[in-house]
Image 1 (tube, rainbow, N blue to C red):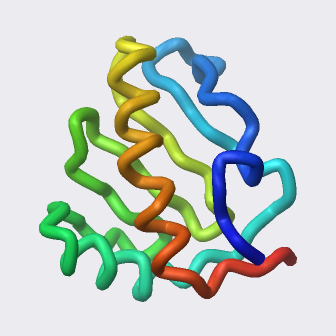
Image 2 (cartoon, helix red, strand yellow; image 1 turned 180 degrees about the horizontal axis):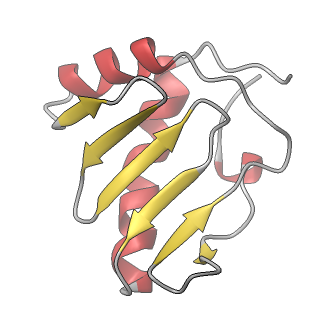
Image 3 (cartoon, helix red, strand yellow; image 1 turned 120 degrees about the vertical axis):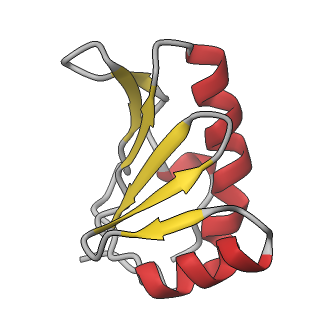
Length: 99
C-alpha cells in the first residue's frame, strides 16, 4: 500500500489539546526499523523507543506502528509542516500494509 496524503485524515487537535495528530484512514503496519533507517539517511534525528519512533522535526513527532503520528505543541502550522516533511519519508521507507 502506498502512503500519501490520502492515507491520512486531516492533521487535527488531539483530544487532550496538547498537540496535533494524523491518524490513518485504514490501520497500517509500519516497519519502524525501516522508517528509522530512512529518517537517519535523510539526517533526521530519531530515537527508537521500540513501540514508537520519536522524530526530531520542527516539532517533536512520534510515529507508531499503526501509522498514527503525534505532533507535540499547539502550533497547527508547525504540525502541518512536520507532517509534510515526514510523509514522503514514510512513503519511501515502504513496508506499510493494511492490517
